[in-house]
Image (cartoon, rainbow, N blue to C red; front, side):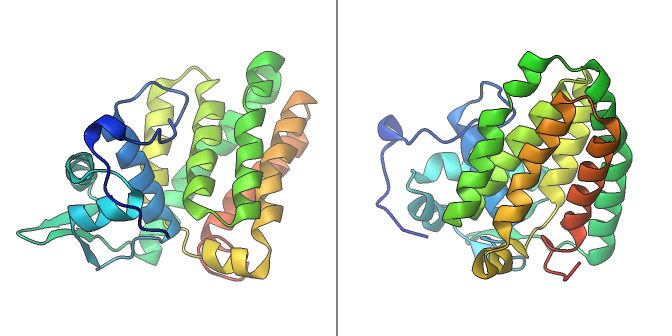
Length: 231
C-alpha cells in the first residue's frame, strides 16, 4: 500500500461509512483498520505503532490510536506498552465456529427477505454490490471488505432486527480472509464478487430456492476460497 504523508486532523480523507450509518471519523478509521485485519493486510502476531499505521492510511496518529483502542476492547488487537498494538491470532476452530453461527443466522434471514423486503430497499443495495465488483477488479482488498460488509449488514438490516445485525457484524470482524490475496493474483476474486449481484437479483425475483443456494455457496467461501483453502 502507498504510504502518504500524515495529514492534520482538519484535512482527513473521507473514509467509507459501513452499514449506511452516520459515524465519527474515529469509527470510520476503525472500520478501515478492521477491514485491513480481515483481509490480512495486518497480520497476526505483528506489532504496529499508531504513527506507522497513520502513515500507511494517510491519516493522523490520534484517530488511529483511538480506533486501535476500540479494536482492543473487541479483542482484535492487544496493546503492547510503549510499542503499539499486536494483532491477535484466530484459530481454525474459531473461524469454523464463527462461520457456523453466521450460516445459522444469515441464510434463513436472507431467504425470508425474498418474501418480505420491498424492491426499493433491495435496489438501494445495488451500488454497494457494484462497489464490491469494482474493488475486486482493482484488487483493492480493503475496499472489497468494506463494501462487502456494507452490503451484507445493510441486507440483514432489512429484517428489522438490530441486535441480529450487531451479532453478525461482530462475527465478521473476527473472521480472517487471508485467501483474498491469492484470489486476486489468480484472477478469481471477481467471480466471488459477482455473487452479490446474483443474490440481489434472486431476492428481487422472489426466488427463495435461488437465494438459499447463493447464500450457502457464498458463506461456504469464508472457510474455503477466502480463507486460503482450495474449496
